[in-house]
Image (tube, rainbow, N blue to C red; front, side, top):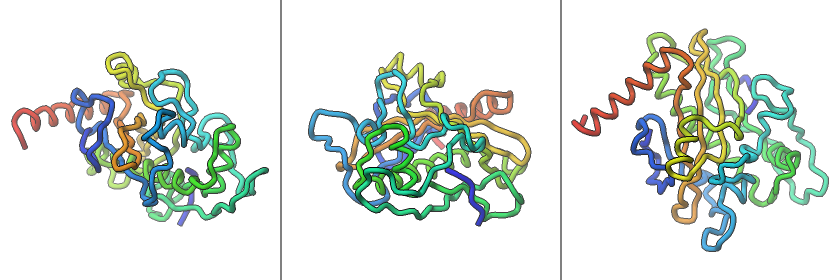
Amino acid sequence: MSGASGNEKSTTTSGCPVDHSAMSKRDSIAVGGAPHGSECPADHSKQGPSFAQSLFGTKATSGKSSSGCPVDHGDGQINPLNMMPNLTQEKHDGQKAELSIDRELSSIPRATGATEDKDNVWEYPSSQQFYNALARKNMAAPEEYIDVMVDIHNFLNEGAWNEVLKWEARHKDECKMPRLSRLQGRPRDLSPMARMSGWFHGVRPFDRHDWYVDRCGKQIRYVIDYYEGAPENDMPVFNLVVRPAIDDFGSLADRAKQLWADSKEKYFGK
């Protein structure tokens, strides 16, 4: 994303390979089905790479270093806000199809400029920029599926932000409009939770992002682990584990309060 002015509750029933029973309900969401509305381009009826591998060039369960998000958040270091190089809108050498250069505005407020400007939001890459990002990393880039890939990329980011807002609702009296300051892709750095998932369940995320949220002057880091779930009706399902990093006592307290709330609901009901 770039700037532009202007727990186990799921959105679907997911066959997530990760056992979330010991996690806070606020920690994880499942996002299923590409909003684009077309069939999953990965053929799950045959042996072969998973959806994340075939579309994003990742290794969802290997535990080894992976490519992670195809939009490069870590190598170019040109833009310190999203750790991305400038993505060209020019057609790539050898590209056959014409790809859209239109960019979609997100719903995620950007922590720059006037704080009262509701139109100051993050902007998603165009299909052409997404393709160029894949090509830059020497990743397979099926041109006919780029629009679907962009939809999924954007949809996952919106889902992640919605989960961040659920955590931030605890501090609505302190800050009515939290904003995203910057983000960083860290696909090779396992979070402690992801590491335990690998140890006990043999499943590790195919990507990780750290999002830095501006809570009206206070910076809060969120960790987001991306897992690939079992496909439903030939559509991809992704599970996002979203939680504040335990960087300070306040975040630790939030995690503890949510765990207690979930435990009460589980054993005593609402």
